[in-house]
Length: 169
Picture 1 (tube, rainbow, N blue to C red):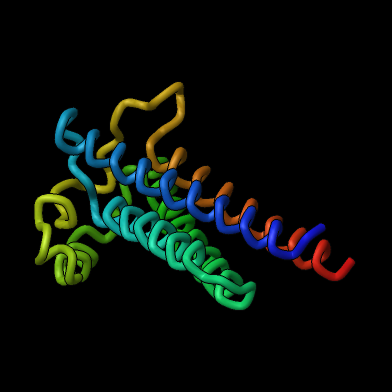
Picture 2 (spheres, one colour):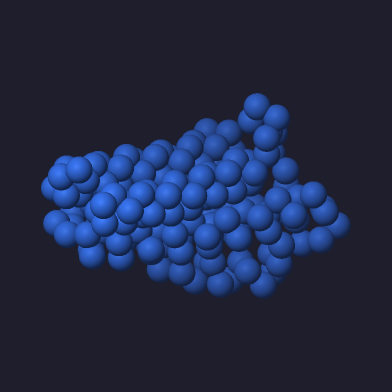
């Protein structure tokens, strides 16, 4: 296949990923402001992870060479892995409600992050990790988030592998 075509296709995929990640953050904001489902520290960390995924995807899409795209995709893998860890911890916490996510210890750390000062209504902690909100199609919100992070990780990894194999052939 033509290298320019492959590069353009990869860039389009990154743009799509950025929009999906931003839409998921928008969904979280809808749940917070319209349905009054307050975010816990781990929820806020997941928002950051999706924002990092979107940011790295847009930076990658702006690149004109494979090296820049690969660096952005590695950063996307790291952000999706971090988000999966936060979502996994939240799934575990909600399945063991007698344990806390560390509200007292995580809240000041999350609330001290720069975006929490810039947009406190969006990035400051206002809920507890133990609070389980109604599931969507029988799946809890942290499970949906974990699914999204894992799918992102797998698809970006596969895309990187396919592009590498195709370019060698």
